[in-house]
Image (cartoon, rainbow over the protein chains, first blue to last red):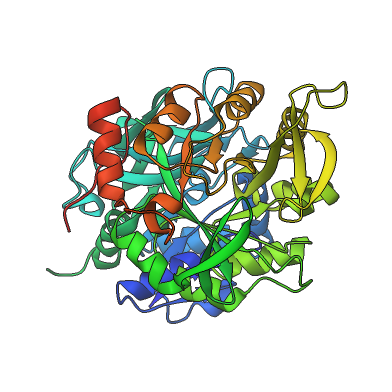
Length: 203
Length: 266
């Protein structure tokens, strides 16, 4: 059973609907006490990194998820802000993230670009991680973000360009995240979500 | 590279998509689920769904219809009509919308823009504005006045000033909807659209009047919009010949060199 982490301003229900559409058993989880049957996690996200971190901390998620995901190996997918909070620090509200992967989150320069970036943009796939199996470079996904992440090459699975290249997909083993909205990127997004659902299962 | 979006904007009345001309004489196109599912199959980039009578009838938006649509369509869905509070926004987002669109209510209570942006982030809040050409005055220097309540009430506000204020208050995207051009198939109003894209840094969407691919291309190339709303051209019973999303995108790409999300073979 997949647990879609539900918090104040997330769009957990949209992710749940997308999982339902690909036939994956999933339900919303509102707190760590509610996760006995959960074997993989999705952290959806809309809104600000600092607000998201605060919501997660209030519900006791950081320690629980660290034990289950970082130490326990449960597959984890962060989406949008759910990607950004995995890193060390975000300039959005000057907040420290979960720090599972090393990287920074900064704001797009609105002097040069329309911000937020809003719309379909293409990815350049950099890795053979199973999350991107069957996803060719130049596939298009739906992005909505004012802030963007940069990570080390080892954790960089795909990049996208808006002004300059930024991290579109990051991951290390069972920890995975997309800056784009898998749940709103049509069949291409559902294909990535399906790869997550199947991650670590025998073919 | 970020692509120019084609957005279908659906005026929904009692579960049906309708099409107006200059904000009047709505005729029924079909039930909303069928229309949206068809547009999704055609690979439209985004859908806006307006419950156009919610405000006038002083009732909450039709959440069941939003939820039914959101369960079938996995592209961004913006929902508007009758949103009066943060609670309404929560309900609409829970029902499956990505973005909230506010029009008349944003004019009546601009604080709602800020409240929504603080709660959900700027990217979630779309301000849609109805604009009409008028004789320029000191109060309306752009020569475009903002209207509300289905283009029935004029506010005395300058359209460019309102766009700047909406952005400052937290709007993440602005829809410029020309009352003069709406449903005429004669092209977007490029003058006001360009004035607004020049005045703000958030993405701007052209709305009202597209009848040909050339109209869309002009909005992108002359008025610098990030997205164009197409309605009549895709499904209006008033059009002599309808066009598919694939046809629009092929022409935009090949004839005008506009970067659009390519159609993916099924």
